[in-house]
Length: 280
Ligand SMILES: [Zn+2]
Image (cartoon, rainbow, N blue to C red; front, side, top):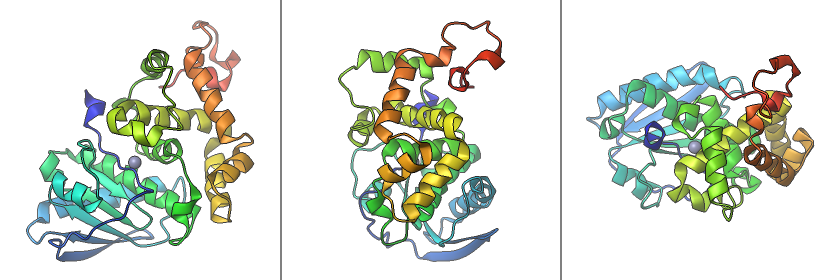
């Protein structure tokens, strides 16, 4: 149940309509990151909570770099206002939306988020901004064709959201029961109805990738995009395999339950291949 609660935004598509009621504008600096918060005049408690979460999130982004461009953070007063602003309808689980240098967050008071929930949400969303800023410029970031699993995988891993999504065992069962689904190729469409599973695939696929190439492989992928590659070329250069081959490897890992250590649970850990170690 817990993972159904989640927020998470996606990102690379759509444009943002103005939220005209957000007339209170305040700046925030946290380490080298710069923000402009925009809220309704009376939303001081929500603003304070989001401000605190932004300050706590910035150091946790350093794993991937720093936010080079200032980010405008708008706090939408309701879910309806959020969906209207991002021109989406029917995404009840949506709590925020991230782009290159802007975030829209549904006010925590309107969805009863705890401070920990807000911290996760803000860190997740800022991970998107950082990825887009590190992978491109304000002009070309949307043309990089970064797939959902890579975007949401990096954000869910950074925000340590694994408990909100299905386990590898549950995902393996789900994939086996739905052999006709293309969980990578159709991820955008499937996320509307199968949000938990699709984000779970993203989370576990990113962890699978990190065990193979480490943070450096992910950073090198972003830097190669910044230097001009699209995602496919950048990933192939940095990870040493194509996205299609990596996706197939991950699906085999699920189908054959490679995460179980090939059924040899008593085998000493140092004899197991890295990808055979159980996920925590
Ligand atoms: Zn997201």
